[in-house]
Image 1 (cartoon, rainbow, N blue to C red):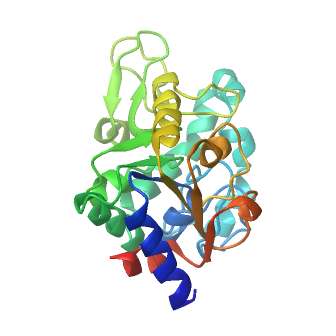
Image 2: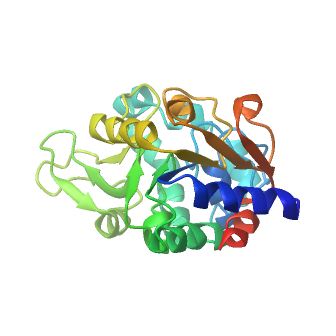
Length: 261
């Protein structure tokens, strides 16, 4: 992470407004939340594809142990949930507990401050952990949903995250005793229409789209940078669009973003 690259990124953000930010798992790994695709125990700011979709383990269960025991590509699929929701919650209970313990890091806080200063219009995130909101960002588009609520598949009743935590390890609806489904996008489900439509609207109106902590490998979100007038990338490791970015800064979100203030 060179001072020249940081200065160039700061200049881009100030010169090209509005600026919209797209975040992936790389910003949340720095809060202790591993992603789907990085190796066990990495936790170093790498970015995966279904970003922010894996909760870190409780203190009694190391991250590597959680990865060894659960295949997230299985436990986060809608087919598995419909077949055996209690089995899926054996994984999601650990994830909920971990995500609600995680705290916003310096990267989240810096984005919230950039928004307050009028330099970031909105944050589009692939993460489900609500850390942007908790850091103070006001305009956040959650294209993969969030752990904020879980809903009853039978009657549609919605439960807040506190109510879900109180019902673990297998939360059920008070009305019909059906197992609740987290309001996050499982593999095999469509993205929420309103969220993805707004994400593309923001990207198309952006003079600059800044990608933070995503490898840009999963569509349709990976196509958002190409909708903007120009885009820059701040990431730890390569991305699918490095060759097309106006600027690329190598490093961790928690180090790059505060340096822009």
